[in-house]
Each structure stands twice: as structure tokens, then as C-alpha cells.
Length: 132
Image 1 (tube, one colour):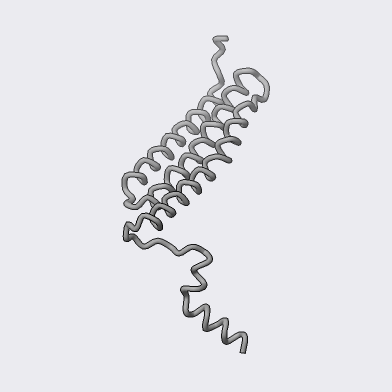
Image 2 (cartoon, helix red, strand yellow; image 1 turned 180 degrees about the vertical axis):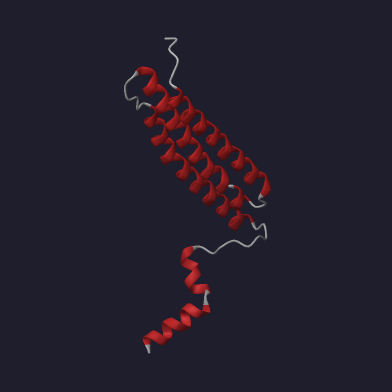
């Protein structure tokens, strides 16, 4: 299996892999540059998703050209990652928000959804205006 692949396949595969590296590098820069946990969790999640898609497309191109048939086994990996990365990000955010609310760190955190309407005087005055 020492066949050389066409340059028309090698160039897009190489560009997709370089693009994946750029996304990963920008994720690392965002992780170092931002200060709070909530700001730091976005660059890795977004860049990881984009980088994974680039590697998946490069893999599909490469193995399809190598085997001379459509190779879609890499789709299983990207489908799994596309489902788990956002869910993991949401769970991490909710965990940190819970820790900040119960730990009393003194940081400003948003109120729980049920308490937002009760704490806002504009909401109660507009509600009483609608009833009258």
C-alpha cells in the first residue's frame, strides 16, 4: 500500500490539519488570556469543536482517497464529540455557578431564574400595572 496520493488530496488534507492547529492554538491563547472561569470555558469548547470538524474532514478525504471508496467511519467520532462537548461545557458552567452561589465567594453571580422576577422592581410594577 505504498501508493502516492494525488496532490489534489494532499493539499486540502494538509490545509484542514493546519486549520485545526490554528483553532487549537487560538483556544490556548483564549484560555490564558481570559480571567474568569466563565470566560475561559468558551474558547476551548468552540475551538475544540471546529478543530475536530477539520480533522474529521481531513480524515474522510484522506482515507476515501487511499481506499478508493467513501470512508465515513470518522463520522462516528465527530457525532459523539459534537454531542458531548456542549453538554460537558454546560455541566461545568452550572457546577461553577452552583459553587459560587453556595460558597459565598463574594463574586457577582446571576440569580436563579425563579428569583429574577421577584428581585426586579420593574417586573413587579409592570405586572401590577397590567392587572389594574
